[in-house]
Length: 303
Image (cartoon, rainbow, N blue to C red; front, side, top):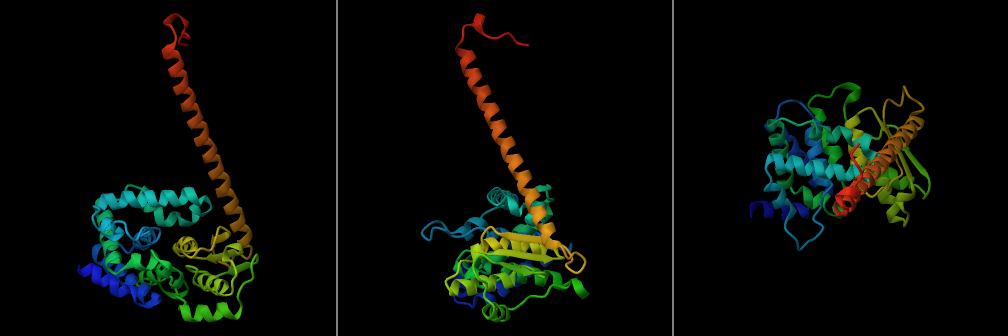
């Protein structure tokens, strides 16, 4: 009941304030459960929960279902969620890999337990009431989580700077993108300016999925968060993201195009291989059915 009341209160919050509360809960729970200094796992937990939502308001409470999971079960469900994402959006595979890698490398029990504890803290702070509803369009939860996690160790030029929604919104409304154009951000972070631009476009009756969103950042976790955010914010499939230093790599958009094309080529090859394997197995199955019905003297001799 306490969790339910807490979640009901969070629904009425300003989305950005709500996102900060969730991020603080994630950061606190992770630091309490694990002192390794890793940022990928807690950010991955928040991203995993962000990729699901209470689609049926009359169905079982999704938060309660997650809370009932053991650490191993939560890890398995998380693997399934990321696998579905990669199958649906192979173009994002190399971008989100830093967030899913730990789940596919047989994480030790202590790490799985820390991840589950962090997920419970996010749920108790009402994450599904933010990222599982239309309120997700009004906040950059992953960007705030990453900022809090990085602020403990970041120094100098590598420090993560979160752009407040109010500032991003002003910039977006001053120069709202037209449809079928390209928007570039050479220091994209988790994509906060993209979110604001898409919001401004919708307010003016424009479709943000027609835009090519091109962003670069030196932090691979920021780019991974941006890739996930592109799904949460409905930015479409024209995402062109790159991990690199724009000061040192002036042609980063070309490199981003090349990476995207290569990952799609590999994904298509894997898809064809799967189809071929499925066809061979079906042929073997049919052959077995046919030979089983044949008289023994008519069956083909083994080689």
